[in-house]
Length: 372
Image: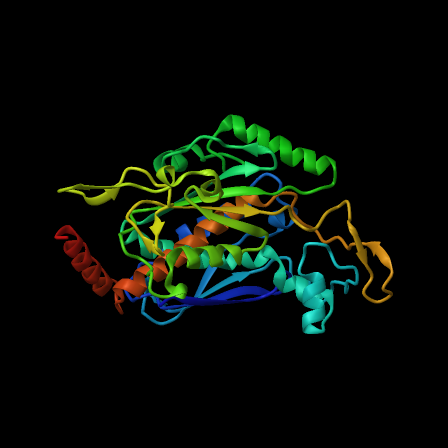
C-alpha cells in the first residue's frame, strides 16, 4: 500500500523522495520531521560531514495547509556539501564497500557508485520514516530504539519501552545506561586511535501494534520478512533478529515460545515476548522487538589492501571522509525503517483514502477482536 522512491547522491545538490499511499487528512509536523533529521546527525564517532550539513525537510507536493491530500508526498533535503563534479575519480576500491562490485556491474567508475551507495541516502529515508511515524501516532502506535552494543561494550539488561524513551535522553551513543555508554565511547576512542572503525547493534521496539498485521499466506506478506528485508537494505547492516533471535539456537522449545493467556478485558495475550511480537508472519499483539547488527564502516584511515583497477597492481584502498562509528545514527534510521514497514502493514489491512476512513476501519476491527 505504501511505497517510496529516493533519488540523489552524497555530494549532489539534493536528496529527494516520493512517498505514495499516505491517506488524506494526515497533519504533517515539519518540526517533528526535522527533529528526527537532527538526531540522525548526532552521535559520538560521526565524521566531519555532519558539521557541514544542516538537514531540513522541504515538502514539494502532496500537502495542503499542513495536511496530506492523498496524492504522493514529495520530500526534499538540500545538501550543503555540493561538489560532485569537482571530486576526483577513484581507482582503488575499498574492501567492504560497494566500490568494486558496483563498478564492475555498471561498467562505471568508483565515484559514480559510491555517491549513490553512500549512507548519506539514509537522511531522506529518515524523513520518509518520520511521516510514517506521524501516521502511526494517529493509531497510538509508537516506535523507540536504543543502542545495545558498540564493539565489545554491551548492554545486558532488558529495558521497558518507557524507560528507553526516558533513559536514552542526552546520550551521545543513544544508550540507556550511563555506565555502558562510557564503555561504548571508549570502544570508539580506541578505534579512532588505531585509525580504525567499529560496529555494533541496536534494538527497535514498536508498541500499540494490533494483532494481525502481515500474513502467513504468502512469503512477501510476512511482517517479519518485510521488516528484516528493509533493515538489511540499510547500509552496514549485516544481521537482523527478532525476540530471542540467535539465542533460539541454544534454547529448548519450552523456553522459546510464548504461552497464551486470556482475560475478559484484555482478550488473548502473552506474558513473555520471545517471538519479538510476530508469529507466523503476523503481529501477535505484543511489542515488535527487532535488533540489527551493523558492521564497522568500510572506509578506514588505516587503509586496507586493494588493487588499482587501472593498473591491476596491489595498492592501499582509497580513503573518503567517513565516520568512525555510525551505530547511534543507524538506530535512528532503523526506527524510520520499522515505522514505514508497520505503516505499510496497517494500510494493507485497514486501507482508506482518508485518515478518517482508515480509523473507522481500524475501530471496526478492534471491535471484532473484542468479541472474539
